[in-house]
Length: 113
Image (cartoon, rainbow, N blue to C red; front, side, top):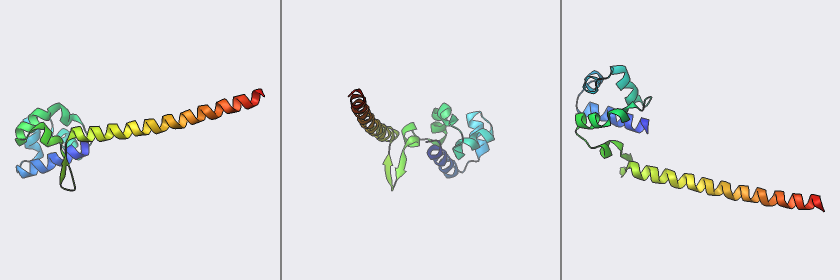
């Protein structure tokens, strides 16, 4: 997410014809701290999201939207997709573990005989 937001920050800044120094000054941070936000090295943009949105005259949702093949995906949709993937992975792991348990029970039974 840092890289996505960082790229958006860079585009927004260039569209406003502002330098990194000017944006950093408005945020009351150093130019190097702002540069790290743009490069995706820092997640500190989250601490400044309201100020950033005010500077670039956008809403937080607009800042956090991701465009894929010219289709906007909101941050909520990204979280939902991520959650679904995690759930699927856990369900698959549970199936695998149930099979291991079943096999161990068979082995235990065979050893007792």
